[in-house]
Length: 204
Image (tube, rainbow, N blue to C red; front, side):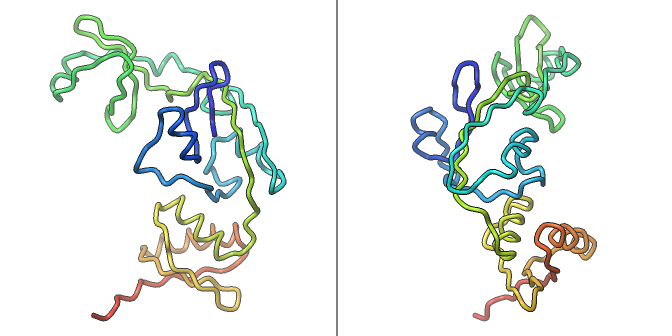
């Protein structure tokens, strides 16, 4: 569970009860323990470093400075944009509203006349954070490591993986070029070779 250190506001959690109690529950989110690969950028940099080497079965309180999490606010990323640009897209800009501009998420700071002040910094930039982490267990088996890595990196769950003679056979239809890069990364993480195959269609 992550909180803003200064005012103790919860902004992220894997605990459904905590999410409900703090008004951030999302029905589309799958709450519960998450398997992450340390050192692979699946967590924010500071948290990634501070979790490394921690013991399973223990709970830790980890504090992060703004520099260790989402960085300091960059004044160059706060810009004035004509309000007409939003109205053209049928959007009525209001302070605090999050908008997508050219594929980048930004937060509206203020609206004055024909100009809108927009902040392209991460919403949590410039803030010190506090995390409460419960390490359930250390994942050891290559098959589980591969499935967890692919779930977080590609967004696909229940990927079929079979281990044969220290080789992981993975049912995943991806281009050959991508297979080579992914196999290299999986070898680095798990120590086993990977082969990819197209999932077989079930006979009706």
